Image 1 (tube, rainbow, N blue to C red):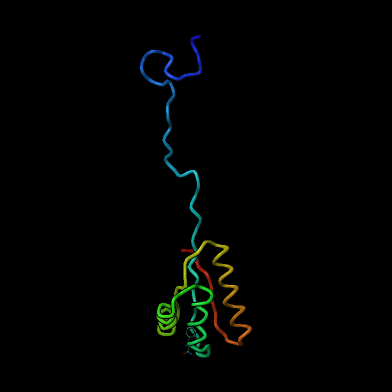
Image 2: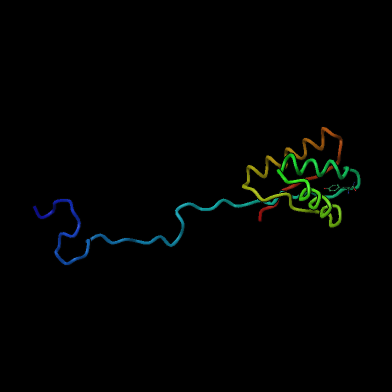
Length: 111
Ligand code: TYC
């Protein structure tokens, strides 16, 4: 049989099969979103630290640093996530703030 299903049937050494190398990845990486915390004059500092530990899994020292950065500059990044994770974190922050009657604001922004 001239074609037994194996490659290299023409006796010229090549496989007869060419390979196209991808120039772009098959899967696109998802867009990422920063979750931002905004400063206000009323939300207690310890509540913000607690929230950064509870929602964003920050250790106490990093949570305190992020809280102070927001307190001093007006805004700070809590974390960077895919769209639905970021959306869920924002909703959790706003719900915890609402339940505790704090005016804390949180938003997300595409990187
Ligand atoms: N500025 C607040 C205070 O002094 C503390 C605070 C920090 C509030 C960060 C919000 O996102 C915030 N009590």
